[in-house]
Each structure stands twice: as structure tokens, then as C-alpha cells.
Amino acid sequence: MRLALAKSSEQSRSAPETISMKYYIQTYGCQMNYSDSERITTVLKQMGYEKTDGYADADLILLNTCSIKQKAENKIYGLGEQFAPMKKRNPNLRIGITGCMIRDESGARGDVKHEVFKTMPTIDFVFRIKDLMQLPNILFKLHGSKGGDEFKNLCDYFHISPTITNLSQAFIPISNGCNNFCSYCIVPYARGREECRKMSEILDEVKKVAKRGAVEINLVGQNVSTYNAKDADQDSQESHFAQLLRKIDTVEGIDRIRFYTVHPKDITDDVIDLYGKLPSMVPHIHLPLQSGSEAVLKRMNRLYTPDRFRELVKKLRIKIPHISISTDIIVGFCGETEEEFMESCNIIEELKIDLIYVSKYSERKGTLAHKKLDDDVPETIKKERFLRITELMKNISHDYNQNFKGKKVKVLVERIRKGYADGKIPEFKMTRFKASDPKLIGKYVEIEVDKCMEWCLEGEPA
Ligand code: SAH
Ligand code: SF4
Ligand code: F3S
Image (cartoon, rainbow, N blue to C red; front, top):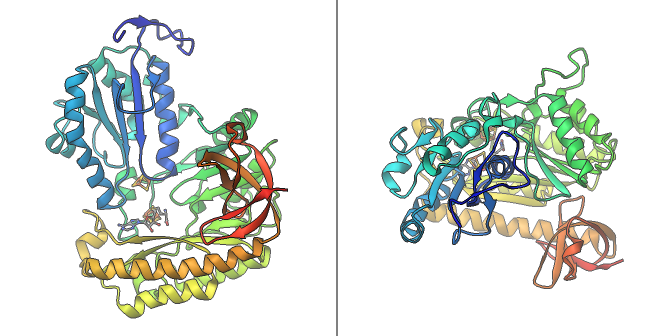
């Protein structure tokens, strides 16, 4: 029964008694948030909270939010109403918000001020993710829950070990925040300036997850190219990120390394040189372009030109000719003309970029673009450009994917759904085959590809 005192086997000695209550975390946004939720889980478990799979029987709901577009924030504001009847049914229910929407202070309603308290009367507390160590105090106040003392004096939330849910693919942050101030982007305001983790700390985490069965490491940071570690070899000519990749490559059991995201202005030749050299470097890179127009890139404060991007793609293809390249494009950025939009389409076509994450520009309050430029491309035009560039990508992707026809590929199974198992091949292509056994999740299966669609490949076990 709720509020009964119970001891769990995961409790530490510093948590002599805990309250048996259930938590549910809803994660939005990017891999960084996904990884942060794994650290939040560690704190809650240590406090004796038990996981539940939905809102219905939760005593604690945490929304780990994203602010990248206004739509993402609106989604959270829209949830407020549905919490009122839930709180009536369960007076013990407490609801908190963390993630990129929470930037200034951490604490309970009444102790700190935040916009969400005004617009969402059902929210009880907010905390900045870098104040995760304060969560036990906040929950003690709101729920009477004890435990979590071991986290209270930590100076860095990265020192809290993540509770890995996906045993074969781990998401490991190497830095937090960003110094770039691309004019459209909220991240430097939401997450603050870039702070990099020590290389030894990252390697320890990689070794730990490898021991538990991880074969794929996803390194996460807003600009992994500027990774700068206090404990890297400072006398070496090699960039710190290249040093890190080399070290991870030697960890036993790790045979795929992916990273999100390099910045075209900062990626170094020594990282490109590792393609085709380090066995774990997959033949795929996510290289965010944002626009194919030099003038738009200038307005975006991206600090590279389309020619620099072309040059990078050329160098990568010298290392691995069939490398898969994905990118991000924003359509309808301030003042984007039809000609400027066509420059994005043309470079995508010219370089045969085989996967694009397209976003319609969404003005973010406080950013440079909000202060200095007009969000003047009408929504109908943004929508139309979104559809046109998506159509273009479908064609390129369809053509690129034909290269896999009749080939044997290694799929790392991620899930079983609707009679199919699916997962990625090294080139990042989602690939599926008929299967229903959940034991396949996290395993490699060799598939002979017989169908190549624009969004996925299909085949049968070879
Ligand atoms: N650090 C990465 C991007 C992280 S944000 C980089 O430098 O590329 C992920 C993507 O969201 C961006 O690449 C961009 O395409 C999109 N995005 C960011 N801010 C946006 C905005 N205000 N409107 C629309 N899309 C945006
Ligand atoms: Fe945003 Fe630019 Fe930083 Fe990426 S590099 S997170 S787009 S400011
Ligand atoms: Fe969103 Fe924050 Fe990631 S704004 S995209 S969750 S860094």
C-alpha cells in the first residue's frame, strides 16, 4: 500500500527506509534527454521508487522536456489539463518537469518561480537537469520520501551512473551545453555553456556497459567535435575527440561507435581519417548542414560555407566510398527565398545525402534570430518546402538503398513489432525481417536483403 515503508534490494545503506511508490518518466527530445532519464532513474530507484509503465498508477510523474521548437513546448503545456482528474483519483500524485524547458532554478511550487507554475496548476516542482542531485530534497518535501543521500553532495550530475535500459546500445554523453549560438537555436540557453566530461570517466562508463553486453556506443554532445578533456594527452597533435574514439575502439565487446553531433565548422581531419581505419567506426555519419545557401548559413551564424560541407563529404567518401550521410535541414528560416531554398535542394541532390531530418523553422524567444531577424516565411510556404525536400530525399534514399539488394547485412535488433524484428545495420538503415521472439532484441542477425524501400530494408535471415 502506498506510503507503507518498504525496503528494496536496490537500496543503499544510506537509505534506511523508503516509501514504496511508483514513478513514470516521459522523455521528449534528443538522445541527451534519453540518457539524462537513465540518470534520473538511478536516483529514483535508490530512493525506493518503483517503475511503472504509464500515468495510470504512478505516484510520481516526471516530464523530461525538449524546447527545440515551440510545438515541443506546447505539447507539454497541453498535458496540464489531463493531470487534474488524475490528481483527484490519487491525492498522493506529484508531477514534476525537468529537461530543456527548465533553465533558471530548481524547487517546489512556492519556493521557486517558473512560467509552468502559472500556466499548469497541476505541476508541483521543476528542476534543472544539472541540479538532479537536489531531486531527493525536493521529493522529501513533497512526498516525504527518503534516501538518495549519496547524491546530495555530488558536484556533477554526470557522476550519477545511468540505469541502462537498452543493454546492447548505450547512449553516453561526452559533454553538455553548447557555445555556438546558432541564431535559431535555444540549446545554449537551455543547457548553458559546453562542459566536457573527463575521458577516463567516459571510458569507465563504456567499459561498464560493455561488460553488461553493450556492443554499440552512441556518444552524445551538442558539438562532439570540440570535445576538450582535462585528462586527454595534451602533447599530442591529435584532437581530443579522435583520442577518445581510438580509446573506445579498443574496449572489448564494442564494435559500433556512433556520435551525435559533429559540427561542419569544427570536425577535424584526424576524425575523418579514422573512418575505414578503426573497425568500430560505422560507415555512417550525421553531418548537420541546416541550409545549402551561403547567405542563409550566415544568417544562421553557422560559420561554414556550403563548399566547406562539400569538401567534408568528399574527404569522407575517399575514406569510405559507400558511407551513408544523414543531415538536418531547416526550411523557412528568416528571409529564406525560393532561390535559397533551392540551394538546399541542389546540394542534397548533388551530394546524394541519403537521410534528412527536416524541420520547419520555429522562432525561439531569446535567440539571436528572434532578436534580430523576422520570422517572415509564411507557414504555408514552410509546409510546402518541407514536403518538397522530403520528396527529394525519398528519391535519393530509395536509390541509395538499392545498393543493398541481394547483400548480406548485420542487423542489431532493437524491437519486435507487428510480426517483424527491426534494427539498424552499420549504415544506419532500419532493416526488418519476420520474427516474433523478444529474445532477439539486442542480438545481431544476418539478413539477406530482398526489398529496398526508401525508409527501410527488408529481408530474411541468411
Ligand atoms: N547540435 C546540433 C543540433 C542540435 S538541435 C547541430 O549543431 O546541428 C537538432 C536539430 O533541430 C538541429 O540540427 C536543427 O535542424 C533543428 N532545430 C534547432 N532549432 C530549431 C528551430 N528553432 N526551428 C527548427 N528547427 C530547429
Ligand atoms: Fe544549437 Fe548550433 Fe549548438 Fe547545435 S551547434 S546545439 S544547432 S547552437
Ligand atoms: Fe531538445 Fe534539449 Fe535535446 S532542446 S533536442 S532535448 S538538447
